[in-house]
Length: 157
Picture: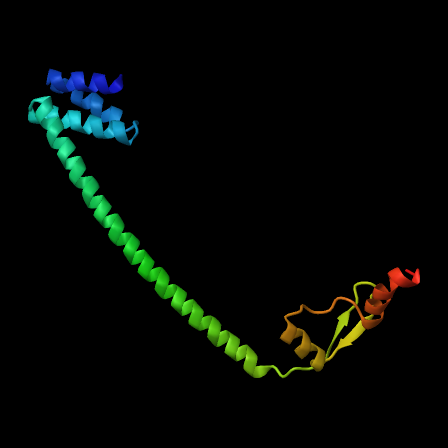
């Protein structure tokens, strides 16, 4: 409906509508702003609406094509930047891993049992075994591990 009104204003070639259209375009959305600008241009140039509309459509198509080319170039540039950032991050991670591997000698440490709450020693040999097998750190001390295994068979808790 509004677009029809704008078309009628363009066809009238009455330049007294220009101030109203300029005020109107400040509060309308992009599509309406484009049409209002188009109507103002038609009225100022005193051209037939059809010719101006065709020129506007061609200009819009050219603008969209250019935006598409620019967007593609932007995507390619962004992909290149992202790939470079990924390579740098990977190199940084490798350096951090190498640095972490250099400085720490394996040593025994204590863990807390989840069942009884007592601390138990996790030796270097056990650490190497767990690492080799891909196990996570033990959660139970040796006594609780064995008592849990025996429980169904002994009738004890």
